[in-house]
Every structure is written in C-alpha cells, then in structure tokens.
Amino acid sequence: MNEKIIDCHGMTCPQPLMACRKCIEAEAPDNLKVLVDDAAALENVTRYLTACGYTASQVQDGRTWIITAQRGTDAAKTPAPAVEDYPCPVPDKGQPRRIAVFLSADVIGRGDDVLGGKLMLNFLKTLPELGPELWRIVMVNGAVKMSAQDNPCLEPLLALEAQGVSILVCGTCLEFFGLLDKRAVGQTTNMLDVVTSLQIADKVIDL
Image 1 (cartoon, rainbow, N blue to C red):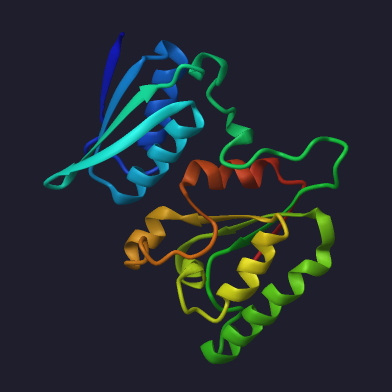
Image 2 (image 1 turned 120 degrees about the horizontal axis):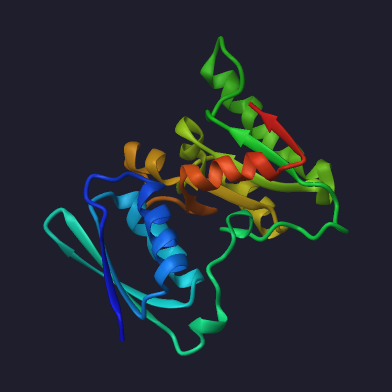
C-alpha cells in the first residue's frame, strides 16, 4: 500500500483541503497522513477525506494535529467529490433554481445593534417564504455567532436546516470568535466552499 504525507503547517483553510484534493486526484494513495496546525482545517480536511471514502482519525501532538486516513475497500468506487458537489450536492437541473443567502453579520443594518439583531431574527424566520428555491445559507465573520448554542437565531436556523436548507459556517471565523466547539447548526466550511457556493448559485441574497 502506498502512503502519502502532506505537511500543511502554516496553511489556513482552504489550502490544506485543496492540497488533499490535489493529492487524491493525482495519486489516490491507500494511506494518507495530513499534518495541520489550524483547527478549522482539521475539521474540514477530516470531513473531506471521509467524503472521499477514507476512514480518518486524529491525534494531537503539541500544536500539530495528525490526521491519519486509510482508503476503504470501496474507496475505488468513491471518487473525490467534484467542487460543485462538495460539501452539499447541487440540485438537479429539473429542480427549482438555487438561492444562496450570504450573511456576514449577526445584525441587519447600521444604527442600533439591538434593533439590527431583532431584524436579523425576523429575516431568518421569514426565509421559509422563499420555498424550495432556498438552497444554502453561508455565514462568515460575525454571522457565525448565530450558529452557536443559546443564540436567539439558532432556532430558526435549525428549522431551516431540518427543511433541507444547507447551512455553511466559516471555520476560520468560528475559530477567531472561540466558537468552534459551540457550533450547533450547519457544517463547518472554508473559503473554497464559500466561493463555489456563490459561483454556482442562481441568485445570491447578500446582507
């Protein structure tokens, strides 16, 4: 069995994930070790390797996480997911158009943050009115706070996710605010997922 070691020290998301994708597409190693020192990259890389048919485990050595991945017996039948299908498959052409909502704060507008927070809560509660066209919510910067436990906006976000809406939460932003272990909705994501989501969406609502 061939083994590949990818040293991602000093890399922030999405660079480690992109390095893994390049390696898998070019060499398809049976065993893979990925060294990362970025907490957001740890979760994103592990999730990506699992999507590629690997069984992944993690150990921490000081400030370094060592991700060890072994190709499963059916991995040859599990090609690396295409960019447009990761982390959430794109709807078929026959389905409604894709609307993505891009949120960069936990408030709407400027002037008063208390009022802005109430407006955001009402906005999230009203999003179901878009119907099946609502495809994905992307949360970056201060917006990731809404994904944390006990946040007032968590309930409508959970309801949207239960209805099939894909929710992507920036891992780098979660780490910055100390919320990586407090995320209670959606998937931890990276800038590659964010850019791809905005590219393939039929319409983007940007707040």
